[in-house]
Length: 173
Image 1 (cartoon, rainbow, N blue to C red):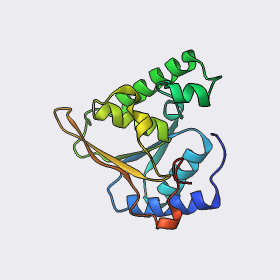
Image 2: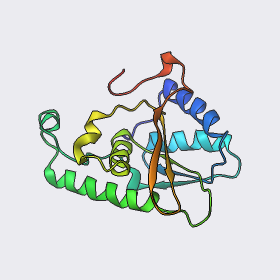
Image 3: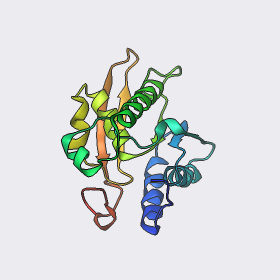
Image 4: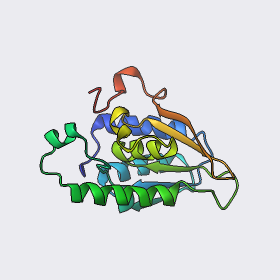
């Protein structure tokens, strides 16, 4: 989980950076784990003046335990799941709120399970529905937060900036 980007991961991050550089990005928040910080630095190199704000809040998580996960991860305790879910919820409440200034565009660079958790919250979906979503490495999920606090999922897992041969995920390796 805390390893470095592979050569392919660096290329994916570079293409993602070029895509995000077309937007007026205000800040980059990222997990303090290595791959996320590396990706955030690559993105920041394409966006002059943007700051990177690493945090442990954006670490990978297991927000709910499903029967399938219990078999795959028998040593992951329900206490750990509860701690992960609480941390994920704190992150959600911190980053998905009405902006104090109009038209902010912030980038969050983090991990697949956490992104899926955020999407379930945005859509008011069942808590364990995060397990039924796939994410491409460096896929882009975009959320609009209205002035009244309503949220809309504008896109999920957009990988149009990545050539087909560079599209990887846990389900599509």
